[in-house]
Each structure stands twice: as structure tokens, then as C-alpha cells.
Image 1 (cartoon, one colour):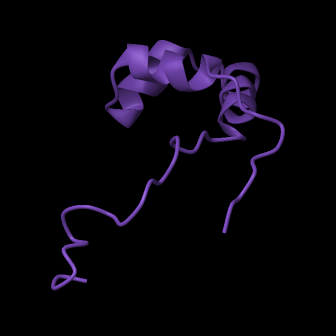
Image 2 (tube, helix red, strand yellow; image 1 turned 180 degrees about the vertical axis):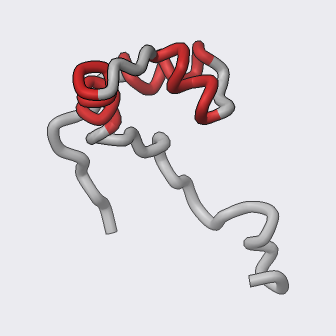
Length: 68
């Protein structure tokens, strides 16, 4: 891997980043069951609130095509 230079750059296009599929459900469950706000969740995870909002609001495609 080092000799091929892959430690600094992956070979080929990796495509768009993956989107967590269960994150929205997990956040909703936390809000309903544990009465945790998104602000508290972001603080606990040490993530910027805008980033957490971005992950929760992001639309996830129903199916992802994998090309080999």
C-alpha cells in the first residue's frame, strides 16, 4: 500500500460519502425515550450542532448502486 501511494490517496473515485441509515431513527428514539435534545446529543458527541443537523436532515437514497 505504501509503495503504491495508497496511504495518502485511495486509488480511483470512491463516490459520494455514505449516509447513516439508522441515525434519524436513533435520534428520534433518544428524543422520545430519554428526552434528549439534539443540542445535548451534539454536545455529548463533541460534534458541532450544524454537523449533527446536517446528518439528520440529509436524504438517504432508497437503493445505492454498486459498480464493480
